[in-house]
Image (cartoon, rainbow, N blue to C red; front, side, top):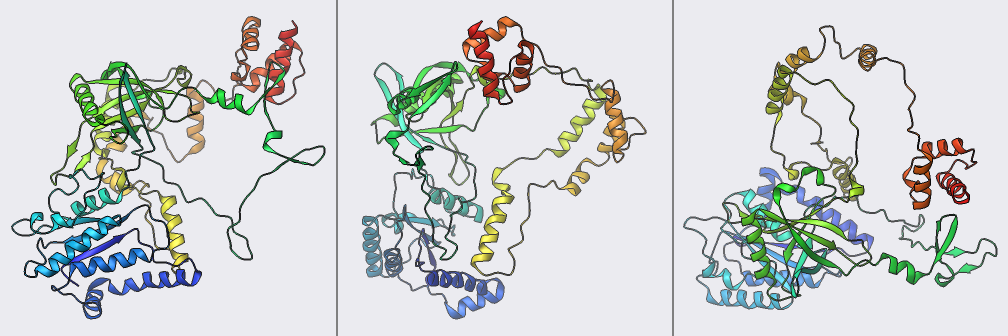
Length: 526
């Protein structure tokens, strides 16, 4: 093996047959023998190392590995790890063969990426690798950057290459009369969930398919899609809708972003947050010149410190939302690696119905000494939150169990739940501040272990320990009539509806829809 190492991404040599799956698991277990100092000696004896290897031969082996894959791959990528900027300086035939093979791989859709390491005197790509590595549409040159001096720098470059920059949708951004550009919409944060369970036939372990069929309740005959319709009960009448009418009701606007206006960034408040934001970036595939216009819009928004308000329709049959396009400036690290991309965040703005009006009860206000003491505690416990530092314990435990089952391990690998608080570290940081704060807030005889004492004190502070019945605000006849005529009785709770039925002597049953029908019928007749 030469002084470079090739990593094959997205390769899958496993055969669909169960025997081949077991063989693949055994090959993974065999890698454990190369761990530690003893493993390094075993690797040197069994595999070895050489400085006279041929990069062209290694690329030929990679090509054969990809050709043996029976599965459809989203992309094929080869990563070259090296600190030698001219591996075939003394052998022009090997250099020529490597360039030829790299060109053949590019023509077959295989991407070659260089993960170059730091070396004395610097790494000069122009000597050899500028003709070897591939330049993709997603690669803007920033991910190549400088050579990696640390493992963290190398891992960041690998993650930047490994992460698939896939847009969830591509659409037009309309800035006004005749002015449009195309953008791609991306999810920067997405919840990771356990893979969907696959139903298997218990005797053969083969996947089973689920089919749903509808039958007539009276005759038992099979119903076709054309035999069924949808209906909505409104005002005690059943309104039947055709399939075309249902689809037309779901259609609001064509997919796209429409600019409405601009607002200062100070107008955007934290309580406007209702869901994770999305990110937009220019797309040249739909409208040429979108990048230039997008960059000009981003620059001006950053200079003026404003955000754009737009109407956002991501796809057909989806209601439009108002969004705030918040500008974001590009940031690079010391290795010239992009850590924050330039573009706009799409912040989903709430409707009036999304904002609740909560009546807060009066509570005791802390004094200055208590506030200052709590400030000291908060300062001691502050830390910089990094999402990548915390793994989902449920997901990690799930995959560790699958790994133990696939590799036939006695027990799964131990997992540390990083979401649990480190009490020893917390106690060391705050010291005596917790006791001092407790003395300022609670009475001298306070004991948190005595639950009965705690409950009694809370009851006394609230004006009595006995439980008070919940009082429901009664509605007047005019208000009830407006709800009934406007079809908004569904916004009322079941206890309120029952109270209305009791008030007017109506028999509405126990279900909410039955109560609504009874009240609607009463006020329709009267």
